[in-house]
Image (cartoon, rainbow, N blue to C red; front, side, top):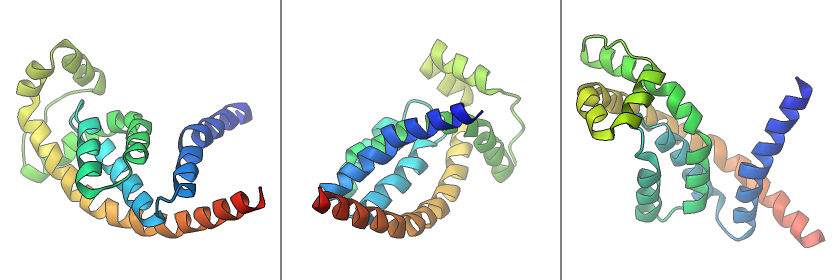
Length: 167
């Protein structure tokens, strides 16, 4: 069990932490980085498969955020997007009083792989309801994540700058 935990920590450091620290060392502000990361997570779990990369790129371009940071986080949370599909579908059903659509994640993924447009037509109302539920949750999540991440990234930046000047 301990070995597996070490591998995950190594993966996290190698794929997420190190690139973020390098971007901070290159002058990306902690505030911009925090917003990039918060939006990367929020957009990365958007309950419409196949859309998050484009959404993240568009948001990064429009808001002048760090594209590598937002995409790194987007790709890292992909398993979370899959895990949250059904909860977002159920939240949308409750929010709109829609009938329960008995689906599982494997069925959804298989439908998308079979034919994206066919799956979209079949799930259109469910997806739309889930996207509205996601909007409500994301509008609360992003500011909370930002408020949490800014001081954390300021400390990381301070340490990174100190480490760079002592090298």
